[in-house]
Length: 586
Image 1 (cartoon, helix red, strand yellow):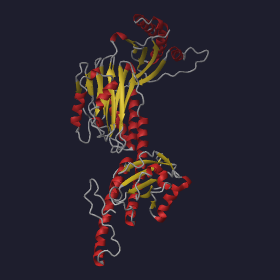
Image 2 (tube, one colour; image 1 turned 60 degrees about the vertical axis):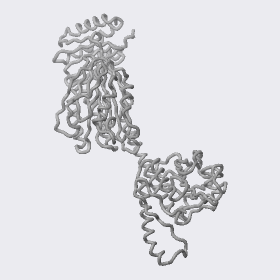
Image 3 (cartoon, one colour; image 1 turned 120 degrees about the vertical axis):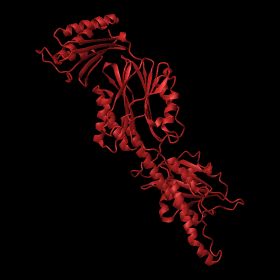
């Protein structure tokens, strides 16, 4: 029989709670004077125990705390069985089909039980139902049958010495039974049988009630966390485009299960001229709302990037969008970069985000000193773009602050640690660059989510690019056709010349009908041949069915039939219509 509840970890030692003395022990006056004090001590100890049981939102930690409270204060050992599979506690899950041993303390009993079916004939349901009517049920541990043997196995139960006592208590949630709690008391040194007196059983039942509600809360939180995490992941790109001249890789790590979901995101967006936009951002706060706002800002960033605006203009319009969502609750940091593989340059703007790491072709790494700006959503702040050389062989890592700032490590220390870690990173692939960056994380110290976007710059040689500015005149389509054919023959792509010249002629013809300024024509040879025709009209072309007597309306139909891919992109001052052909196409 226990004389007190064990002091709880992290709490002040509990004042011993004396069991009720047996009838007739001591003088009646002394017993009466000690009852209020003992009752207060017991209530205080139970309150500390309940606080520990409810101190975590993680299921495993909750069961562990339940075991720490009950063993050895109330029992010598404990086995916790929870429904399998874990139920959806938001609605009535119905009667349990199976139980799994989820936690043990002070015993190996039940560790090999695995998933056990519910007791035949509804015995488990009857045991749980009897809880309200007759209090906790004491099971006969020496019998080969019964609930304990069915749940843990008769063979495991048979290893218990004679005189062992088992106390079975249900774990009730708010709507349904969630499992069973088995407490074990071993016989005394002299072989005397163990037992649970009414005070012990009442204490255990009280704590089991708290345990059931804590398990219910943990399951509800886990379900909400999974929904929020799934929502956030669904808003992030599963696969990044791989434009020519740059290799990309990404990583996303959610925060620890005990932490709420965050609003970190990353993205890459192909732009005209074989350029690519690179973005990482972090919505401040950790909630389902943060994840939803992240999705809205990412969508807005994609739309703005499609207009081919400078990085600082993209951040300016994102700031306006965030203010429309709600100024006080939707602040976010963001880095927006545009890499041009033909020019070998990168333009970057920062809105209160951690600085990216640029790795040079010689392996040197540096934290980019960018105008930090204010977080998106503050309003009334100017952003500035910085243009930097990004020659072939260099690399850029964009990341969120969860990588470099932890509970025990300040931001500045983490940034310098990352910079030093990535020195020599020019030898890494983008995937290896992400892995190397994650090595700075200390084990078990991650409350925030992390987003990484790594870009290895390969560039596109100048000899693989042909570019012209053409005046919008009637003879321009013929000149464009001749220029394109000459470039293809220089590249040894004579087999593509006829079809490419035809499509170039059609696109340039459409462009000069609307343009007021020179039309641009660009050919780029990579693993495909890409042609881009730009003009200053914002109207995007649309394919349409031309009548048998009409002379116009067939140009885009010809392009769609001859090209492997084609499309049109509206820019800040006009548009670009493009098509691609495989180099091995006959």
